[in-house]
Amino acid sequence: MCGRFASIKSSTQLANEYEAVDGTRGRVVEPDYNIPPTHAVLTVVARHPRDANGTPDPASIVRSIRVMRWGLVPHWAKDPAIGSRLFNARMETVADKLAFRAPAAQRRCLIPADGWYEWRREEGRKRPFYLTSNDRESLALAGIWSVWRDPAGDADGPPLATCTIVTTPSAGEPAEVHDRMPLVLPRKDWGTWLDPDADLGVDGVAALLRPPGSDVLGRIEVRPISPAVNHVRNNGPGLLERFEPVSLPASLDISRLVSKS
Image 1 (tube, helix red, strand yellow):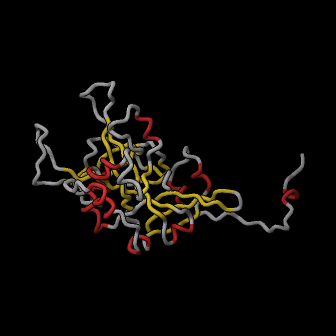
Image 2 (image 1 turned 135 degrees about the vertical axis):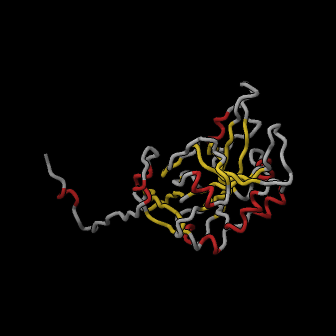
Image 3 (image 1 turned 90 degrees about the vertical axis):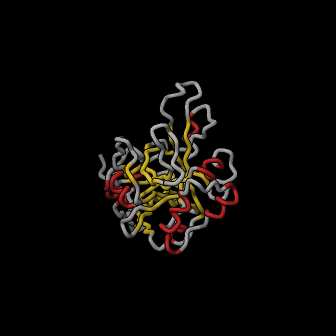
């Protein structure tokens, strides 16, 4: 399960990496080393460009970097607060769950991440780990997105674009930390996943959702990090640094090291 991740590249850097145009329209998303649900994130979508009248050009597809809020709000929702719970979508059910099936069929995106965080229970405590690429390229997390308009608001007001991360059973080294992980898509699958003309339906989406292979798992480094990441208010590059807790001998009497007042 992915409930926190890092995205520290600018929209310009991601546009170069994903062969896309910068479609953020001046909205700046600062580098964030500890992103929780409901925060703004950069995503990659592919759509038909529209002319001044809003008519799409069916002969052309443009891949672009967009700003969305993490936590999917279905178009039928009455309250956008539902998005705080819909920040992950399980691969096994994304194609048929009410909140996800329409976006999965028609609105798929990539969510670039420098890495994500997981916690493993050890000796009664949860130990944090950072899972990142060993080649410094972004990890393309499979996502789906939706557009929501406030039914009680201005019909011509700006819509709210939201997204969620598709998760899969863990494999390889990530499975040693947590039983689920984001679905990381290899570059060869980006075009198919983003294709705006592929209205896939349940069977088509299921065919695209395959567990990660060795080409993906071989890129992922699992790194123990400081418990500072546990608090969402903490941010900065120090969260990504390797951290090994000090193990003291069981025979050591800690009380002797504590001065008495």
